[in-house]
Length: 287
Image (tube, rainbow, N blue to C red; front, side, top):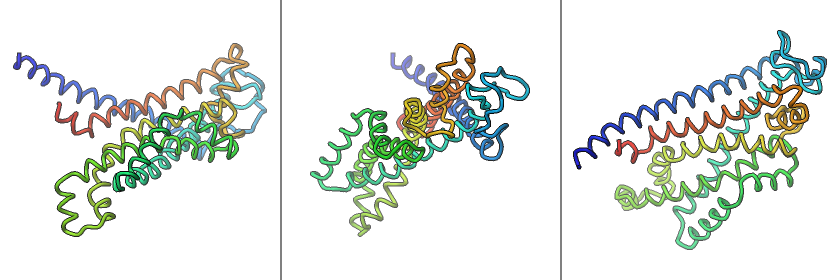
């Protein structure tokens, strides 16, 4: 029985590594396509985003590759700009969540017991609070804009990063080499810089990748509800909202933004799974 189990684990190991590599490659390709579209939109779009001379609900042709919307705007141009907004929101909100979450997590990890308990309770409440609802409240307070969406989604995601940072920090502080560093006179800031932060990023890169996809989806949801980036910014969520009234006449206006949203979220999830297989030491030992 033991030999069979060992053989099964040996077989599963290469399979899991291969699956992790495939997820990493496919996720990277999917997100790479969206990133390329975002970069292209900075320097070139087929038409001006505000150009309404294409005719209402025109079918795709050699001039308008994805047709036009109900206002006569080129849909392909809107999709390119939507990719730029999606990448901007994803990166911006993840950076805010990472910086704020790491700072709070380090504070909880290095603090005394009662401060740690208080911060942990607050983090638990923040994690339990629906992310989209929290983002809606912040956007409603600050006003609908791209900056508001990025800040709101970043703040909503920072609690998860903070909780993970706290757990990893306390685990690292319990190690013998950290105790030796303290005895040698290393300051708290030095321990955080030399021992905690270098060992922290492999744990946080996976949830950060997941939060990227979640941030893009959250921004699309906010824009669909009219709380995201206002016109002329062409968020995929707003394109979906505008196209729902004409979906039977011009289905591409609704289908294409939805497909791009799926590609982005699935790509982020696959990339996160691949990174987890590559970076998680427990999984590497199991393999």
